Image (cartoon, rainbow, N blue to C red; front, side, top):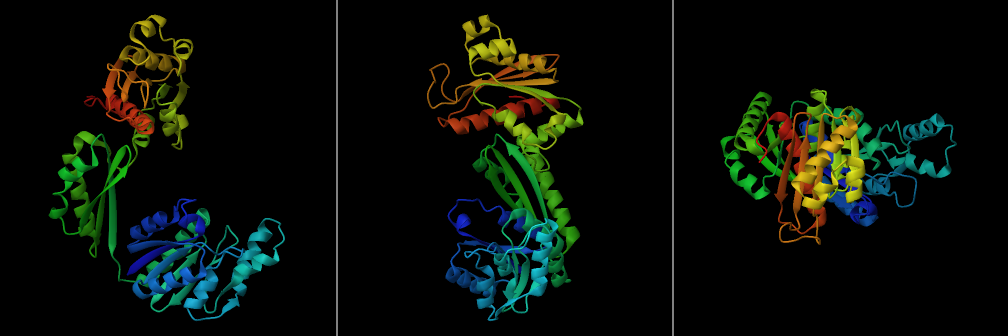
Length: 418
């Protein structure tokens, strides 16, 4: 069965808001054995919405549509669905009950405008919304079954999981395609080089497609397995994954598709170890990346953005003699920063960064793109100087932060740190 996803709303069409619904729906449906043929976005124009619904109905078996089910005048999805299905827009008592239940649960009186949300194409099946005001509905146009859901992500996700996916699985019956997706995360390998060394893999398999997805500065290798025989799909994907891990072993960060920060966090938690961070040129980016992880309090103890030399001395106990002799951007300074952070927090490890993110500030000896990274443990402190050929400040900061995380990961695992 072919499935399409349609996102509606001027805020999505214009780019004011990033559409997170479509990728989420696609991932969940593919995991359930659906083939997603197309994603489309349209604004709050009734004519354009009608046109795209007609187009989709001619080429898809299933369509998931999000947005436009609210009480305001620009919420036109139900009206457009009524038009293309050639039915009247009628008051649906079941839909109205779901709206009333929502307001009653919050001790709020339902407004007259919210009744608009209970008008659905005649003959539609209601999709209950237990956490919002907008009920969804199923409407058939030609041979395509349209599932209309609210655009609010947490409402959409609950309705998709509890109602839509089970309903689609029921409709599929035995006519099901099995999907298995595996991800491997790489770092420090250019996308073009990764494509070159991994390109022979796909030819060895009947059911596996290899995809590359850049999540700068990391790179994800996606293995998409699709076929009618489940065990054959699973076996091929697992075998292809072993090939990827072998070929790209020097650059593999995570065998489970985790980010550098997530993989490092998991590693620290599993070892009951902790980390403290001292940042200069990265301005808190390493700390932010690590604390984006749920449960980071289990391994993250301290962060200091010590931009000035005074801060490096007062907070991290960096020697004034070191700063005078070597300067702020130097391996020796980075080592003392990492050691100072570790000791200040009582952490297992310390990480530090000091560099020149650019686009100004570079010299012949220390050009823009230079970063010095310190890694400190109780037994030793190491320093690394790396130069990246980039004059873009944000890019350099992201690379510096990722390299620091990767160096600590490699240090813990006793891997090559060059």
